[in-house]
Amino acid sequence: MEPVKGKAWVLPDDVNTDVIFPGRYMSVTDAEETPKYLFETVYPDFREKAKPGDVIVAGKYFGCGSSREQAATAIRYFGIGCVVAESFARIFYRNAINLGLPIAVVPGVTDHVSEGEEIEVDLEAGKLKNLTTGKELSFEPLPEFILDLIGQGGLIPATRKKLGIE
Image (cartoon, rainbow, N blue to C red; front, top):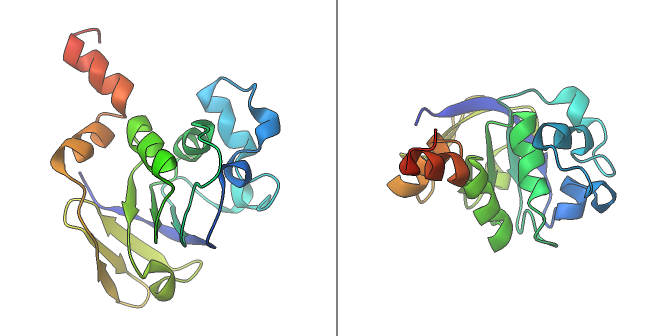
């Protein structure tokens, strides 16, 4: 899997799934429609400023709150290259992997990355490099089977491929 390079969008601790994808849009079932509501209530300008390939950098407990899969779906279908955080809510973390959204726990990341800086995340090597400052952080690389799952676009595409459906 190639490293992800992009502009950092830094978010605080405790960004919950209702902030990521507001509950009033739970009736939206088309995955490609979900990015229209990404961060609508708390970070409404995010969708106008962020670009596909950019990286969300967050503090602790990113994705806490309800287990809504639409939160990870909206981020993935917006085209975010990777989400890195100090820590994630367990269900959000697994939803991201199942949906093929690159994700990594990077201790200390919010102390070393500021909004707008260019960063590179190598999930295989477990390295995050701040291309603006030159600082580098190490983190636990994702296991090969998770990298493979993300590389195939998530659990459903990987399962279809395995079963010979696609």
